[in-house]
View: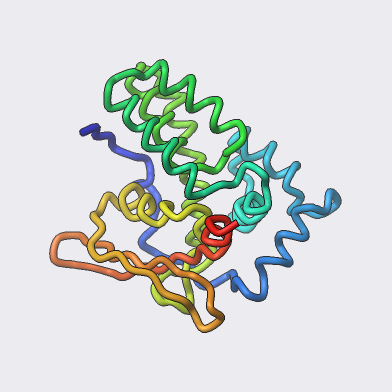
Length: 221
């Protein structure tokens, strides 16, 4: 098994944000804004800044990028999990150059795929390129911060936004370095699908909630 110390431990993620996003009220409005080239949430403008790791992007803007991508033709969250597993295996087999080659092709059309960003970071780290490894971790940091911005995740009424069905698991494992206990799902008061994951740290545990109806909708299309 591969091990690496991630940069996220430097971020005070345990101090969760207040709720800044309500799915029913805000999702469609933000999605509409991202398609407006004159908006400060324009997808094309924000994507260029994200790819350049512009740290002046605020959490709402990164959240807008995630929301906009749910309407992208390349967004196939459940199908993409298979690619992530294959990329993990390449790294596990120490085929780092191949992992970088395949990961680079995939990330071009899937810029916010956490698993791919992590695997690319790891491959570059093992190849001795710490600068590139850190650059991919910075992108995942920006995504995690946007997730925290969207909601504190402490209840089904204040869930965090997650782009992909596995992002909640990565959030727990990578941002905190903790384990996942019980895994369940449910629906909030509006009928939106929510992943429910237990974050375990020794004897301590906390249930976290991640809202993903945009992902489950794609599964049935």
